[in-house]
Amino acid sequence: MEEKKQNPQQLNIELSEEVAQGVYSNLAVITHSSSEFVVDFVRIMPGIPKANVKSRVILTPEHAKRLMAALQDNIKKFEQMHGTIKINPGFDPMKPPMNFGGPTAQA
Image (cartoon, rainbow, N blue to C red; front, side):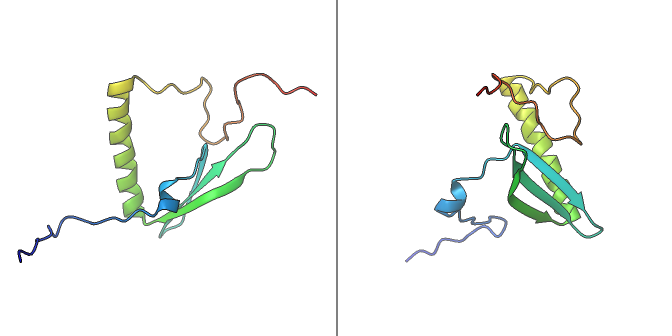
């Protein structure tokens, strides 16, 4: 019986059904210490003053920098295929996105 040799550089990643569903987030809050970066993924809903952290990811500084590079590379590729991602005028990365579009709710 022939044994398949696995490339030592190849990583086998398993994705459970629950994790594969994903978590929607429209805000990421990033903090750091000298030894780690903490990324809290938050979902803000229109008209609701309280928002909940849906997922927290803790990274080493080195991995945070690799993640930043991977995001920059993927955004560049996305924009080459789909056009520039537009950011609202007056965008402030320090403020949560509270300017939801659409009609205002009325009673």
